[in-house]
Image (cartoon, rainbow, N blue to C red; front, side, top):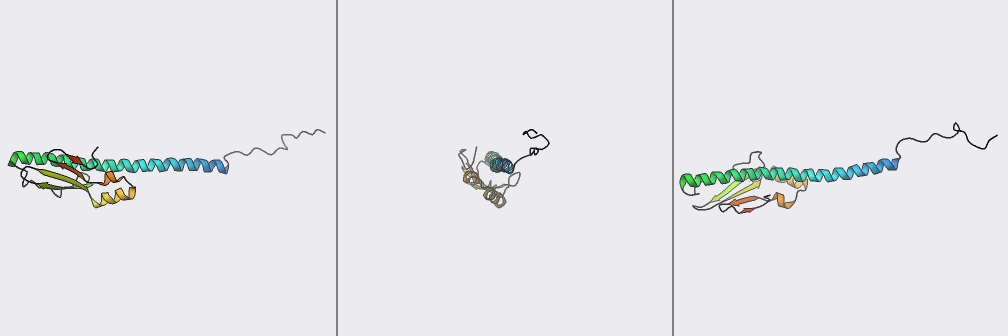
Length: 139
């Protein structure tokens, strides 16, 4: 009789993943998803800021047209106008020779920024004056 074991007597090799391999794969997927989600939120916030920039640029053109039509910025109040997608509301301050336009995030947009953990820079108001000076999250 031989001391060797035969193939029929050996237990079959287990196939598939071990628990530790599955946990490592799950941890890697969770890390990648977490990074991806935060990047997605930041990009969505930038898209909303672009909506505010569109609003303020259209308002600037309207103010300059008003200056050409009336000879001054007085009486060219654009306050209360909302952005094309509704993320920002415009307010304006005018004198005879100057204006300041401010696009502020609506309450819904501000709450979305807060819940997404968006940077404070993107949460601030967009401001533009008659000299083209900008403040806020302009690109």
